[in-house]
Figure: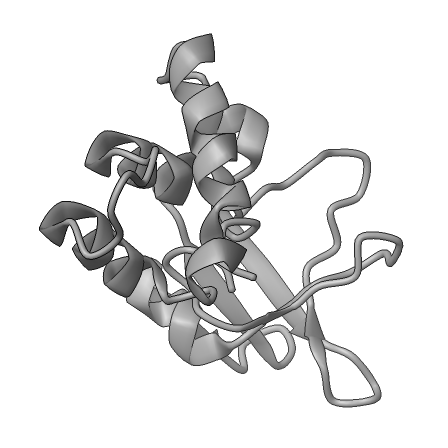
Amino acid sequence: MLPGYGGVWYNKNGISNILYMSSVTKKFPVVCSRIGGNKFIVQNPTEHLIFNRSTSGLYFHNTGDRDVVLVSTVAGNRKDYTNQDYAASKKTRGSLALVGNPRPADYMNMVCSGLVRNFPVTPDAVTAAIKVLVPNFLP
């Protein structure tokens, strides 16, 4: 799972990742154009990313000699939190198995309503874990 996108095909050892068009359109305006070739143009706030159609029918973005990130990273998400907050979020992630690996919203509800006695996780830690560690937050 990728925050804001939902399901994503991801291979950490691969050279590409696949996003669903319906998920991308929820975050950025997307224009389909046949002018100059069959392509999609994703209009993010800083630039327009062009995804050309390959001969196999898949659309791709050629990054050339630059890095393009349409996803969040733990390092990028962590910058708004203290080391203590980050440690608490990792502890929160580690405790998921103890309560049956619930969805983030259900986990927050369990913590806030005190369904588990003497549970060492706070609502703030759950919020930090969701914001910092997603998609790694989910089992």
